[in-house]
Image 1: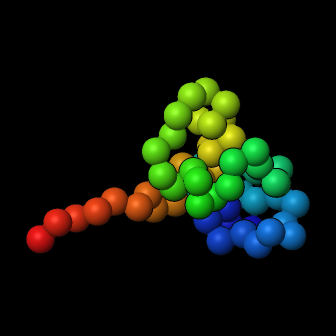
Image 2: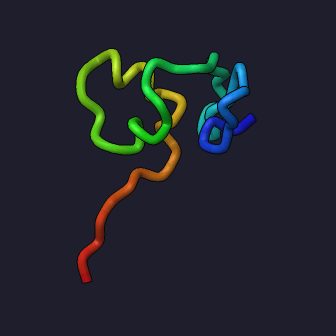
Length: 60
């Protein structure tokens, strides 16, 4: 299962870029990981979501 699109019931997912397998659930949620990453434990917990799109604001 793709890490960017897994469900809450999933027990593992695979990152798109390097096909690495991660166990779920993680300490920090996908929604929280898509924002700003603070600290080492958050960085390691958010590793599966590294390739998912980050939410950025673009002003026109």
